[in-house]
Length: 275
Image (cartoon, rainbow, N blue to C red):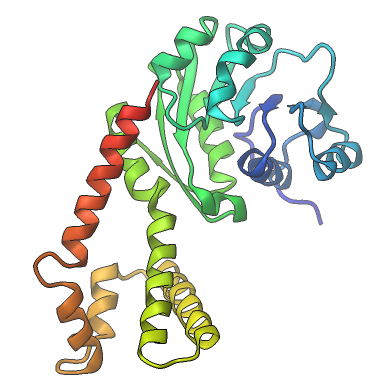
């Protein structure tokens, strides 16, 4: 049985860069009903897997004369934008929606390099988007109309949650929370495993326990409508072992304070790297 077609997906699309993030989005679009016959992939370093997918599904890969599409999605490495500019300019028509997932590239940056672009959506996905569990923040230029916003939402929602921002200035804060956030969670699993080893557990066992505890708790958080604070309270018995550990983690200078400091550092760095 074929996947249902998302009516909001653009009728034609060109994807520039089909690496880990671009490839994940492409898989989601095809599952959602994007027409392969009207989809163009531009990637000079196309992997064997991408070449096989394009051949099997009838996707145009690196054609000599790419068409102007209803939507142009930029998913190559951000540092490649300047070099790609001459090839990108002819792909943008008056009604083309440009969706960029290039880290650090503002709407103003994109407009400077692609003066033909009018309707622009800047998006910041995170690493779990590669398995369809991403958290993406997006902001639209004033020229993006309701239909184009719906198209952008459908494209980005193919890899997970989408949150829209009214102020592009908040992208740096979002980057600090969800963009960098997976690394914070990985560090938590790493630190839990190291603490287990220090408490006497075999290293491989401590690693397995920490990994499964973090992933299991995340799955519970996703499945349970209660917020994180309530879930934490429900698993904490007064005077028990969890309460004793949380008293250490939540004391002054503990995890909440460190997380605020870390997010603020990441936010400031994101702003410094924009350009």
